[in-house]
Image 1: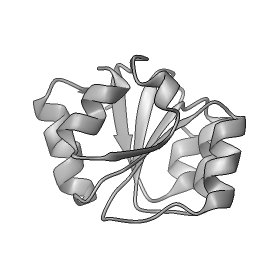
Image 2 (image 1 turned 180 degrees about the vertical axis):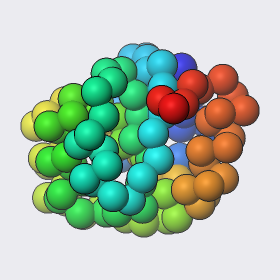
Image 3 (image 1 turned 120 degrees about the horizontal axis):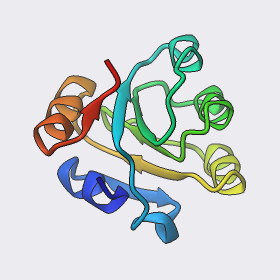
Image 4 (image 1 turned 90 degrees about the vertical axis):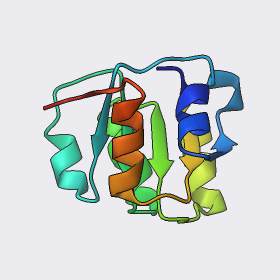
Length: 114
């Protein structure tokens, strides 16, 4: 699924990485626990989370995640966007809950990790 398709399905705003909207991911993972994200041994996925802080960006960097969707109308601050930009990430903000966002992406064809 292309990043731009994720944005469309989730009615999301693209805050960072507009040049990457044609990039694709195969799977999605939803979590507010960054320790769980670090246990993943999968590439090419989108992270959906309600945890909006620098730790989420740093965790995604360590896990080679290139696109993050912040859910529940959570707002990324400028330092988060700067770090994401430095790491070549795409950051999206969606008004939907984590549960709804996950379901919509699954329904649209995004595969789960488990």
